[in-house]
Length: 120
Image (cartoon, rainbow, N blue to C red; front, side):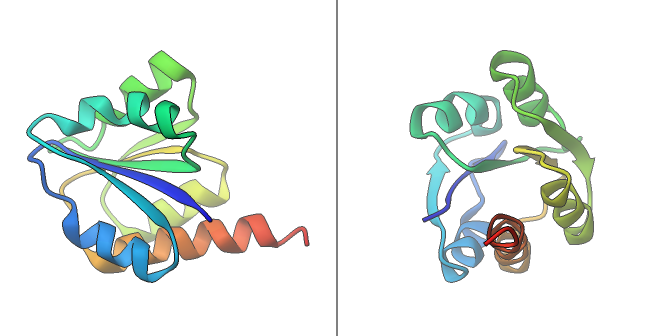
């Protein structure tokens, strides 16, 4: 099962989590204000397949995860398609502006499943 960490600067992310769960992922939703800055720590702790960070700029949590744990990151994203492309390009720490949408969570997990199962 795919494990996804979701960390939102404002302590949100429930809609993205719902979409990711609907697509079959095990979701770890980091609680509290400033959760985005804990993305890399929680990904590392749970050996997550990828993580999604949300803040105004769309970068802080993903950049922190990249710097501290060397997770390949893509940040500053503002669309579902950018996230899908990041997954296809082997990015693990995904930074978005505030986009708490079930469609985003579902699309990213589906893209990851497609990528992983392509070689089978």
